[in-house]
Length: 348
Image (cartoon, rainbow, N blue to C red; front, side, top):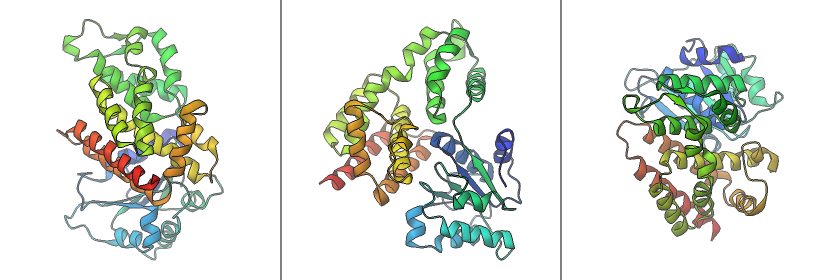
């Protein structure tokens, strides 16, 4: 089956027990992650329970094609629901997924777990979509860049929950800057709410264009570029120094984490498309100048298993950051150094 845009949130927040496999895909990897998290939280009582959640990558499936089937039929050790979350860059590694989905459709097997497959942009002729869309036990969930209305609704919902409203002039100027990456948009809204302060201490509740200018992503782009460049080139000293400067000057560790995620998504999109630079540019990769030159070096360094390991490190860091009381500065700082060390090994 294929989810219609208006039904997606309902189907992910109130999963149908008859649906045993989900394919969440699209060019907006931030939205793919967000919807993957939404389904994970809906299926599992505790998304951080290692006995309830199994994480697999395309490299895991290549190394052991039976790993997916084994995880899907394994009984829960704690008696609750289980989820098997598979992360792909594109169509690579889809064989075990499609084989198990076919067996589910024909009734040859029953699953103890729910399968969640996350991937990038997929064509209608691709095997994954052709497997999930006609399936009676699978659901394909597309993730395309938010429309202006979707983005406006997201901004209004998050600001309303924080007791804030958005000035019409600010809306007109700000919303176009947020288009194209759901994770970036959510991060910028969260930064704005934090900047406006607790409701009980505010002298006003309407967000102005001047407020947005104080926290807008563009103002922090240089600091984030100073971190991302050396991290993925393997320059540990420069990466660590840039991280310390950025956080000392007020750049959010979460913003740095999101920037690292976006860069890996941009690199992954190019490799998944067979080397087409436009695939990365659609996700905001730099097009011109020194930044574009550095990005091309990133693409050459990070590929295959190394890229997948980096994405898993970022994915795990994000999970840890979301835990109550997590030491975010330490987690993100360690992530910066681990990624830089990984690039340094590759670039020798």
